[in-house]
Image 1 (cartoon, one colour):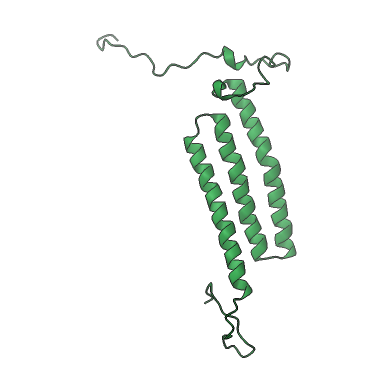
Image 2 (tube, rainbow, N blue to C red; image 1 turned 180 degrees about the horizontal axis):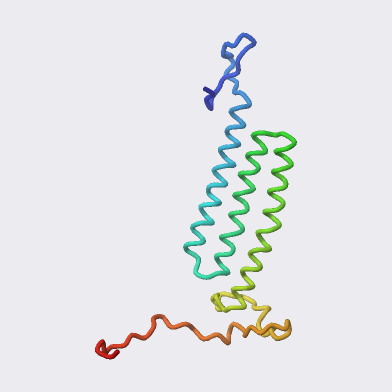
Length: 161
């Protein structure tokens, strides 16, 4: 069984007395750093999805750290087994993740904006305000949406049917 601190062997299978570490140690160390970084990024994405207040803020948590976590895991796989097939597949995965995640986040953000499912007071600049009619859309502007009530009204008289 290979351990993290495998010593360099001489030509006869005996451990070297120089105390040098093999390339396996450095490969394991890089793997540890990449996988730990990916786990931290995925944890940050999950916490952000739970803690951020609205859709637009959650989009950042769902896309940016998650894509970086996937890139770190794929980079670890490519680093650990550097074959032509693995490198090609790794670059393909990274390319398509980096391509599709921002596009899907943009589409979800646009849908949230059009339906008014976001907190408008956190926007620094609203470039889409008043442009729905220019785009030929039947959606009202977000400021036209009424604020939802906190709780539905409850009838106080239980005898009424």
